[in-house]
Amino acid sequence: AQSVTQLGSHVSVSEGALVLLRCNYSSSVPPYLFWYVQYPNQGLQLLLKYTSAATLVKGINGFEAEFKKSETSFHLTKPSAHMSDAAEYFCAVSEETSGSRLTFGEGTQLTVNP
Amino acid sequence: EPEVTQTPSHQVTQMGQEVILRCVPISNHLYFYWYRQILGQKVEFLVSFYNNEISEKSEIFDDQFSVERPDGSNFTLKIRSTKLEDSAMYFCASSVWAKLFFGSGTQLSVL
Image (spheres, rainbow over the protein chains, first blue to last red):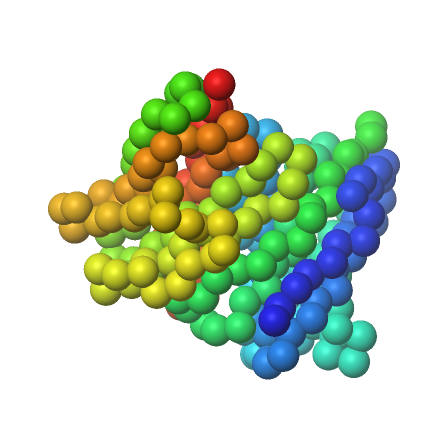
């Protein structure tokens, strides 16, 4: 069975500061890992995905994530936060490339302070 | 960029009534999904659909739920007799090559 744990339901950073959102996963097979962002009153937008190629994955809006098998982690980072990054971020895992269910974490609400 | 379209954006219904939530997936996608998010909780998988049949469903997806692709473009979720606990945001998604595209969701309120 697969699962995802996001540490910190709320993260607050200052504009220009580093963003670090934590995600740990559990999977019985090599996982496929995803980060989604949800802006208020909108759907889920894919930020980036890891599907067993490069361990450092670059996504949209300046975000990136590093797959660390030894730590079972897939933390999301961005060097410099913008006000527009304020949203809820979800880490998710699946065990197949397509046609397989995603299991989501609880989500992390990111607040960016001016 | 192509997108998944869901209608309506908000649906209010009385307990015990049937509701149908509608989705138009991206045209060249082959896998379709419904997820839901109860307020303050995780996004949860309900069902996946491939080649005109259910490929996987969760324990949430009981006999009250059904899905259909009636005309090759629409993908619907029917809840036969709604309960208060069905109140949630329902997301449709379609996928190709490990990339799920989600719609904006339908907020279902059961009174």
